[in-house]
Length: 159
Image (cartoon, rainbow, N blue to C red; front, side, top):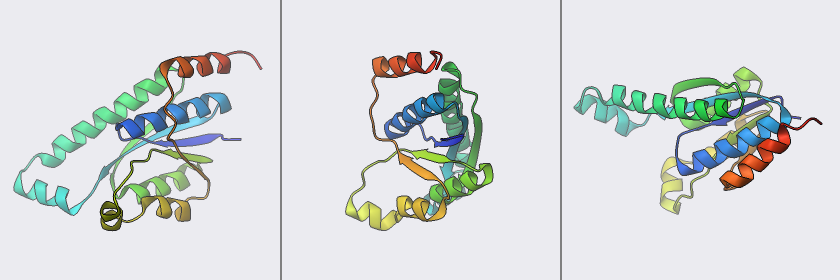
């Protein structure tokens, strides 16, 4: 069903929940896994770099660590992720990478926003729905360690 799964990962609580949910699906489907982290390029980040040289390098180091953390989690359950770090607008970068790899499924996390935040930042979800050619899973299930291990055990049993 899903042969190529793209997991968008940012290290947040919501991102970790989505990573776990996507990892389980990948194991169950025996899918190829792609892990993407995005350094959001914003006017604020550009101003910060202008005011304090080195902010961008520090941000990149932080996101590289987040990406490595996600990749290590996936490797620990037997997946072999292809990981990439990019800079840009998250929804645009996710949809571009999904097209590039021919994804069958994109898994993202979700953080609730106030009406003002949504107005200010726009609707990334609507952009993704309109600009990817595959299924989109918004991972919101909190999966306990016990549930996670139980599903992994079942996925390793012969069919």
